[in-house]
Length: 193
Ligand SMILES: Cc1cc2nc3c(=O)[nH]c(=O)nc-3n(C[C@H](O)[C@H](O)[C@H](O)COP(=O)(O)O)c2cc1C
Image: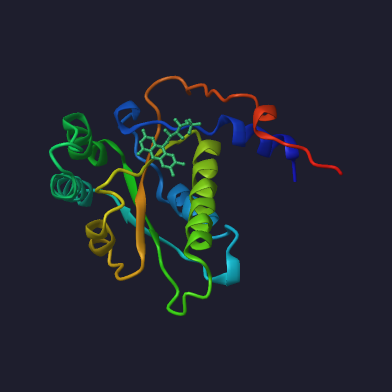
């Protein structure tokens, strides 16, 4: 296994938003690989809590309508943002593939909910890295509608399960974007005594 290669993919992975996607479709084989790699995320107690609903074709405009109408319901006049609402109406139709990220709660609740959410986040990172390796950009959107109980129910989850957002995938229409981070040294404390 090449450490250099994985370092390159990790550092190259980028958020690319649907308005920056080209209209190029993503081959089914690649989407399957992205999902298969998600399934290899770490999982406390082997609960494998990640659930994915994959929207393509006409289902995307229905999803967009659902998102926009849900956003109106879950926001107040103070929290409603017109630009977010417009984005929701448009984004799913600009992305060739949209994945609703779900977390399935185990009935016994033996594993902490935080661990289950963290496991799903690891699965999403696997998807994002796999996409990046294929030159595909992705955007994890966690707005109020995308993480609502309404969205949870829309994708066939229920009760203590959670919708954790949308994952838009597409090829960028422009050059691959560059990223930025503050130095890691500012976030590390070495403890040796
Ligand atoms: C859990 C999670 C939720 C996110 N939700 C949003 C979001 O709702 N809106 C948004 O603009 N970006 C969202 N992002 C993406 C970040 O904006 C993005 O990761 C950040 O700008 C760094 O860019 P990079 O991913 O290219 O390194 C989210 C990222 C994570 C990990």
